[in-house]
Image 1 (tube, rainbow, N blue to C red):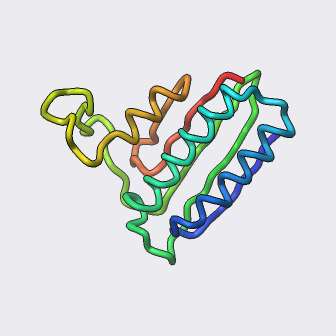
Image 2: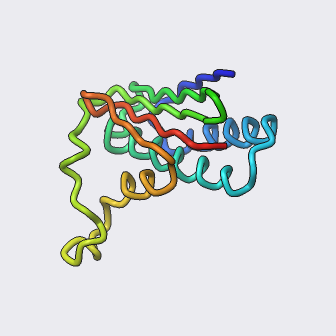
Amino acid sequence: MQQKIRITSEIDKLRVVENAIDNLTNDNEISQDSYGKILIGTLEAVNNAIVHGNKSDKSKFVEVEFKFEKGNLKVTITDEGEGFDPSGIPDPTLPENIEALTGRGVFLMSRLADEIKFNNQGNSVTMTFKV
């Protein structure tokens, strides 16, 4: 099973992604625990794509792809931005970063997903969830 959705870079479009996740997890009888991880991880990634990747430019799109493979759900989020180097993100658990207002999204995504991979450009992330 594979599904793709494409949204404009507007925060209120997160609702479209949330509805897709609701339907996907209901239709495939995914547990509540897995649902929570998928929902939070995906919405964080899409929010990052909108705000940081596409700079909230309404003329740019974010694509979200859901793909079931061998008991796993792979969720890929791709924006039209320049990308970034994920290894350059400071650890939000270090004392000097603990009060920072940003910088926790990728950390959170990596804790919720069973696997996380960024493409070389840094404008696409794939999270794998065991379901």
